[in-house]
Image (cartoon, helix red, strand yellow):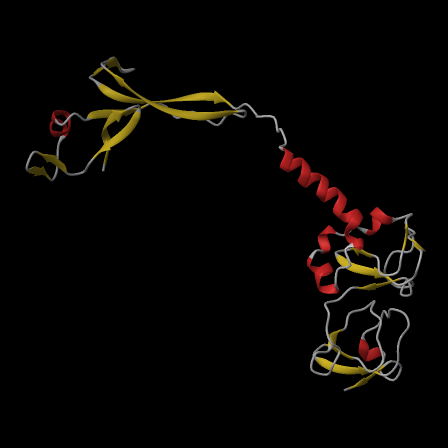
Length: 238
């Protein structure tokens, strides 16, 4: 391809080939006259425009029969590349019926998701659709109600609990909430990964730092300790 010569076809620039075919003959290294005789014109490039906010730069090509260069020299027939500013008009967003239905659904899901009877695994999969702690402050919710706090999914441990801003999940509120974890059988072959703010249940197996433990008694409330600190109280090494 030779970018110094070209043709315009329906306003589209077609660059000249590097090797010209004229009848049955190939011209390996065509010169200016070869290109001109084959209908290709020299390409003259105008100045490049600078970026201008609110506008896009449109490149156009047009055939100029003859023009005068700044130095006074006459430029024979050629293709001129010019650039123009075109103002960008923002198209106002008009939601479709499907868009409106989706927006309504996304508003309603956090309000209704706790009525869907999701398993722990399903709830974790759709964690982002659950209400956040700040959104339910002041509400009274039932045991098992799930919400998100600091990117963790929690479950309420008490019936008819009124959510108070000063009682967020953490140390001191172990009896109110616990982290929702993926479902495991709790057997020695499928122990439950231990994380702080979880309850433990007698005869279930848990794993932390690749060590498997057996729970010796129900905790009753969520615990804020690592298992190693609870050995002799709630756990023993399996």
